Image (cartoon, rainbow, N blue to C red; front, side, top):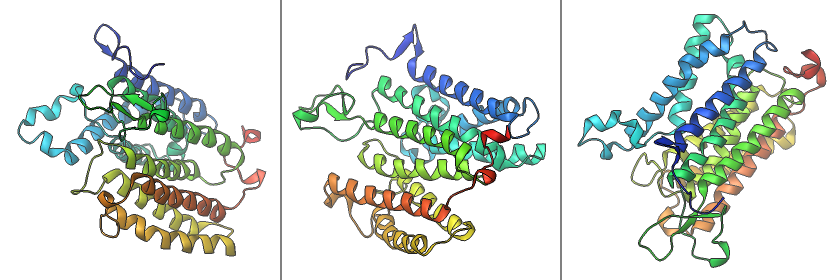
Amino acid sequence: MSAVPASRYLFGTLPLYSFLIVTGALIAVILAVREEKIVGLKKDTILDLALWVLPIGIIGARIYYVIFAWQDFKDDLLSVFRIWEGGIAIYGALIAGLITILVFARVRKVNPLILCDICAPGVILAQSIGRWGNYFNMEAYGAAVTNPALQFFPFAVLIPSDTATPWHMATFFYESLWNLLVFIFLIIARRTYFRKHGDVLFFYAFLYACGRLIIEDFRMDSLYAASSVRISQLLSVIICIALLIYYFRLSCKKTLTGIVFFIVTLIASVPVLGYCLNIVIHPSEMPLLHHFYLLGAFSLLNIITLFLLYGRASRGEVVYAVHKN
């Protein structure tokens, strides 16, 4: 695959972006259906859920984007409905999808955590696949790459422009790769590691947030909650801290090491949260590489802390263990 896509279309006027999103969604549904029987759900529960989640997720993704990019729509309100022109955000889809699952679970009298657990691996895989749509649309790229030694795909992509440095960081690829690694971890860990309903969902949210926190910093088309606050980074920090607090309270094995790391992580969160709010650290005054070190260290510390707080599960405790099938 070259640094520049040959075409944005699969054939005719069918965009590759749309094809990849639909493909990812179908794979996610298939993977969830395979788990349906294992967790004791009635047949076709996932298919019924998908009929609600998929369209509402798309609507949520659009609403989220419009809210934080309102300046692009305020002069032409009808453009809000022209979704084929681009403009959706994955966090919006995830929030809308989660709300839909909660309502669906209440109506069907099903544990919503079970539904989320069997859907999460497929969702992160769909996100990994869907990110390649950004490649064909030549969007979701990062800062300019001026070092000739780094001007190669997939580290960087060529973005046609009038500037002297058309090479940009391939942030879509970074996120796609990270999401794929999270998917592999989830499908392995749910059979050997996770012991409570909700664990797959929470680890999915946590690991995705850590990766997004770093990668978002390199992007040039982020959505902002204020003049310099990247909304995706702010949400990622909130998710990380909330889940650390959750496992600190519920973990059966609160080791001294885990507690120390938890306290250190909360202290380390202060400057990062300040960075996201443009209060403690001003992004315009900090080199991009320093951003990476700061956010990378914070994310790594978060991940280590979570695993220390979580502890280990015995074979009999694993909810989705193969021997229980």
